Image 1 (cartoon, rainbow, N blue to C red):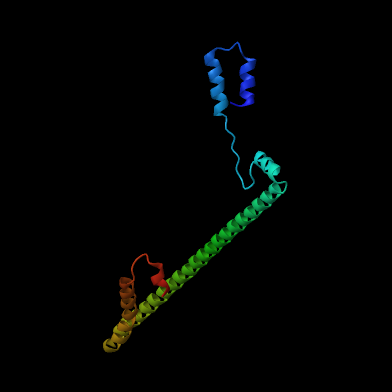
Image 2: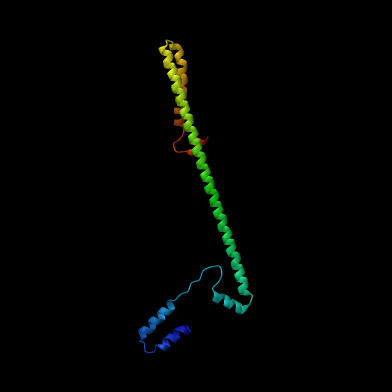
Length: 162
C-alpha cells in the first residue's frame, strides 16, 4: 500500500471498514499508461540515479528509433503512391486500347456496308457475277470480327491488349 493510500485512510478514521476497503479498491485500480519511444519520466529519473548519461543515451536511441519508423512509413507511402500511379496509367492505357478497338470495329463495319452496297448496286446494273467479289469482301470483315469476339474471353482486359 502506498503512502498516499495510507494517508487517505489515516485522515478518515471515522470511516467504516467497508468504506476503507472501497477506498483501497479505488486506489489499487488506478493505472497509468505511457506510450512512445521515450520511457516514462520516472523511469528516466531512476536511470539517471544509476548513471547521469543514461537518460540522454535512451532519449537519443528513442529519437533514432522514431526517425527509422518515420523513414519506413515514408517508404511505404511512396510505394503505395507509385502503385497507384501505375494502376492509373494502366487504366488509361486500357481505355485507349478499348477506344482504338471500338474505332477499328466501326471502320470495319462501315467498309463492309460500303462493299455490300456496291454488290447490290452491281446486281441492279446486271453484273451479278461481278457482284460476288464485293459481297464476299464485305462479309469477310464481319465474319472475322465475329470469330475474334467468340475467341476472346469476356471480362479479360489483358486479352484485349494483345
